[in-house]
Image: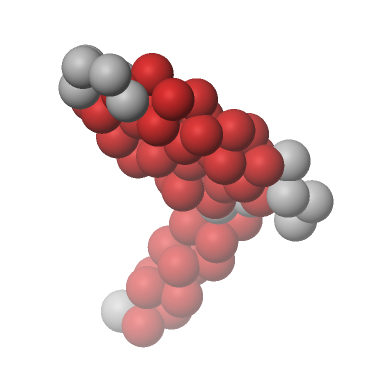
Amino acid sequence: MSAIKILIASALLLSLNACVLTKVVSMPMRITGAVVSVVPGVGNQVDEAIDTAADGVDDIPL
């Protein structure tokens, strides 16, 4: 039974490459920015700042 768990854990680790890991971090940032963008006055500026930060996370070389 433990060999199956090790095999499954290894498969998960191999599938979580750098692209997937950065998307896991940047997608919630982008969703938050989209939600905040509806705030009158400052929403668009905050959305642009969060989107710039998410782009930076996507550019991290892993």
